[in-house]
Image (tube, rainbow, N blue to C red; front, side):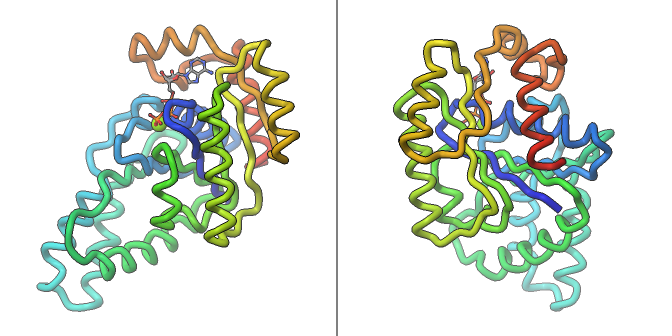
Length: 248
Ligand SMILES: Nc1ncnc2c1ncn2[C@@H]1O[C@H](COP(=O)(O)OP(=O)(O)OP(=O)(O)O)[C@@H](O)[C@H]1O
Ligand SMILES: [Mg+2]
């Protein structure tokens, strides 16, 4: 199993990259799980699907009723509910995490959920996690077990700074990824050289430069799922290459 989390500054293209990775990873016949870990969920729209339930809702339900269950039942109940939350598309499954926990002590619930999720995820070949912008999920350690980190930046100093902060935090928290890769997105010719120089200077492993794509912008404006972009697009071809590099 290979897992990848897509991170970076807000609006840089994490969700469209995640959706296209799901598309290409599942094209190769792999068992793919897409995870929407952004509370402001929009991976389903990008994929063109409408799951009804989130893991957050299950967590709340469990939190309310767990005291009435005996130990063994708790695990069985949660496993059953998790299956109800999984959205099964034709060539991949989707799990929407939903809102983070409310006030109160969720340690027990979260630990149980974590162990159930770990077991569940081990059944997939490829896991793609779309995360919320910024650094919050690192401090909550929700993505500490993934293999690869893709850090998406656009052509802006703010995007670079967030990428640096993510890398610093990973180091500080001693998180152990197999690779941390920078992906530059919405890049025009002028910005290309700047990005390459920046990556060199800051020793970032820049694995892809994705162009600004007019067609994608148009699809987005009309609310058409990004996965409908076809192979004539350079952006799509580049993402297929990333998928090949990571998932084989
Ligand atoms: N290569 C591209 N060419 C044109 N438009 C793009 C490109 N990449 C992303 N966009 C547009 O930029 C916007 C942000 O993309 P997206 O939602 O994927 O970013 P995000 O990083 O997931 O944002 P958030 O931090 O809000 O979750 C969208 O409107 C999307 O269509
Ligand atoms: Mg997003």
